[in-house]
Length: 279
Image (tube, rainbow, N blue to C red; front, side, top):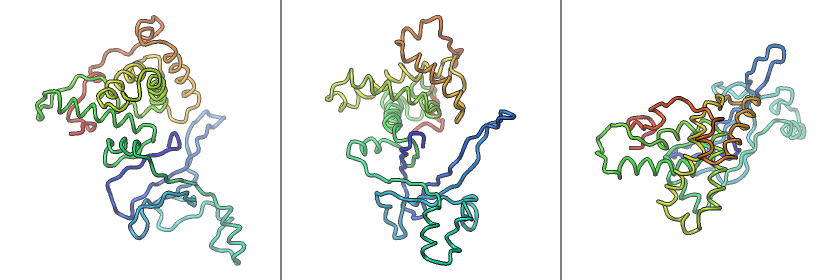
């Protein structure tokens, strides 16, 4: 839910399938500097109605529950505004408006977006803005595995820095933001509308943009480790990422100010039998 737009794709028609939302608050203990998270409720969005048909495209106001999703009975988040013990209908309406809710909107997509979704795995839950990049990655991986004259039973390592490192880049939201910015900037300046409809052109373009933006950052020794919810760390990483974006690829490569991680064969080779293989 990083960018507030979530893509849920699944190959199931069971009416029990849903999306579980857990709301958390990060806190910093001023006396000790301890950082942690505390849960402040959860709610469930069912993706199918009781009749078995998919949930309609509309806004859903989901009541936030206390306790955990594993409790036998729902626990109200705030017992002082309980709806179940109200003596009158009017008080029930008033108290129901005081109960915390999470508003979730289900929307349909246009044909071009649906074509992108069709390139994704049958079951996936991710940020919507990552969909086009995951689709490009899967198409490139399939092409390398099956269309480069390889033996389909071969398990030899494949030398390809894009398909070997892209899955790990999905864990870093700021690096994916850098990919998105570079993609949109170069897409507008360098590609014609007719070129955007050619699959081979877009795959090569994705390779160029990825190697120009994500790959140098993944191999930077100056970029501190990613810590989710750490504002200071996010600010520090953003400063370094923006500094990379302000310079060209060659400037970043040959600059004496840049420090790179020692060479590791895992950053340029793809293991066919890994969990990221799409055989």
